[in-house]
Amino acid sequence: MGEMRSIGLIGGMSWESTAVYYRLLNEGVRRRLGGLHSAKVLLHSVDFAQIASLQRAGDWPAAGERLADAARGLERAGADTLLICTNTMHLVADQVQAAVNIPLLHIVPPTAAAIRAAGLSRVALLGTAFTMQQPFLRDLLVAEGLEVLVPDEGDQALIHRVIFDELCRGEIREASRTAYLAVLDRLRAANGGVGAEGAILGCTEIGLLIDERHTDLPLFDTTELHASAALTFALGGD
Image (cartoon, rainbow, N blue to C red):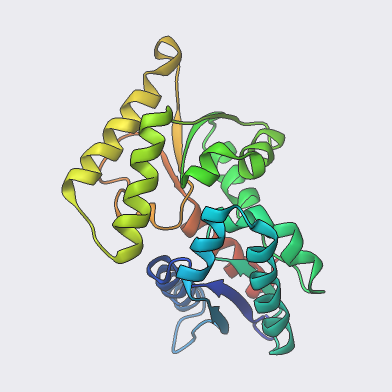
């Protein structure tokens, strides 16, 4: 292997899930290389309150410019690739990529590849209201050959509220876990019983609340899959 590549993280959205990225990247390097090896990481962590305010206002170009500025700084600092450590802000992925000359590793391709590798094609998508309602992730997943189911309006409101009011604040509540699992059960039973074959945890905080210990429905945690793709790139893959 040549010199390990440096991973630039655009994080803080929320810092709870960015901390998971940092842990996964370092654990992955230690597992693959052993010894005292750890990941080469540059982190630009934003003040999420400012980004969340722009999200609520629908001012995505301004939010995108904040992340594009972070991306330019990470490139100047020596990052070899970039990760946006949140599903929602992939809405501005093209704007961020256009600001730099290094590759942005998008969150959808590794997620879709894992779903296909599991032999599945019809999956539920959980995430923020922005992610579930707007096409920026769904269209890319469909382009990868997947059928995507989203919760109904009431369940979307529940999923979104728990993310922002609890998970982003480091609060893990058993009642919310039970509610999320009930949403998954409804999605599995949709379409007359031919509903979701698996579920995308399409918000980087959801893995803090539910994982494979809590359901027999196959789960695809975008945080884990995104970090794994970054590791492959950093250690010499494409």
